[in-house]
Image (cartoon, rainbow, N blue to C red; front, side, top):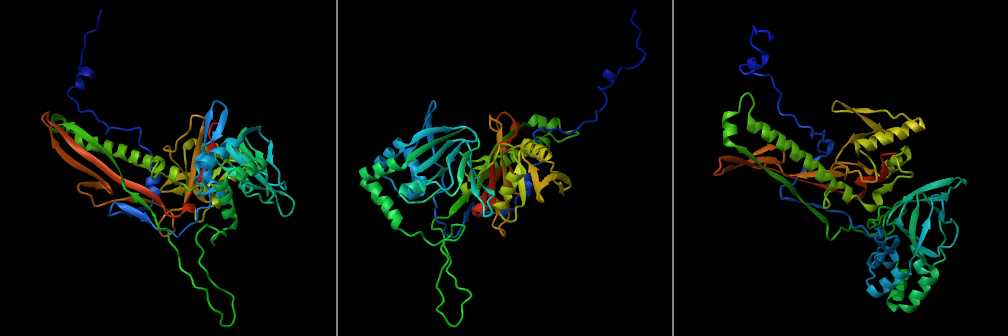
Length: 456
């Protein structure tokens, strides 16, 4: 027998009651540390030009390869990345050189070149990582760094010099290299007059004076006595400095007028729709500042500022090398999984770095440099990522963010919401826009630790 209901049910009572509710929540909102940490430069003309001192190109580019199954070959025009071949554009000679390279496989720990032996071959690293180990002043081994895909060694062999290897080159992972022997070089230079003449001109041409950063030298005099004739000099600039145009991220927000008119209590529907749209646009802005091919930080780090990990996971040694390549490092930026991998390596070694507090949030730090999480840094299918380290600000010749403020209908600096009207279906539209970019003022302002294993 069903009991008779004696009072109003809670289900029926809710029809007359006003519930206590939250504003719409969004799981995709992240701390967006990069947007908060970058100093922003006002770009009123829409384009930001980075003027630098003239820097000589030293041939530090990467060589590209193609593979058919397990057979790997070098792309012939890419051989011009080798310093002795820089500027050489004879397609026939480059094709002949590329065909003479022989493929070799090395297992982990194998020696590819030995310190003190003659440099009698050009070595191109097609895949894998190698370490360079030299004998220090007191007989101990000195680590000179790690080279990975696309790097090269022994380009002096093209000149037929009597140079010797200054370090031992050893495979850190299974490594595939392409090798061009001295005998093949001699045969090709005998057959190709343009190649022979180019290499001979390279031997005779003195290198232009430059400082340790590769910039054109400023001739100075110091420590002199009497009245010697002082050297004359000037500071040379790049003739074609790089210009950064502001990029745009935009979307159109649609809200039906019926919703805006009738369902605005206790929360304004249009305001909440705009708030969530702005949050999504800012997430995309940070993603672009890291990953955009034209101005993203991952793609615009100088090749000489890219460091490979020694063993896979990010170790204290790797972080030290990344910090040592620049002055006044402000912060690291890493995927949360990369930060966790670094923490595991520190624990394994018995190293417990002190954290730091920034804007009320406690973050990890290394050598006093805070490590901020950023899930916009990608993780490859093989489980590797990157860690960025940067110096920021115009006054320190660092990394800066670029934006334009004072826009019509601006709701945040550099972000505007414009009313676009009501269409014939009574749908109200808003255009949400943000203009942004990033610039690296000098190459050593930004460094990247590459091939960081996060899953081990």
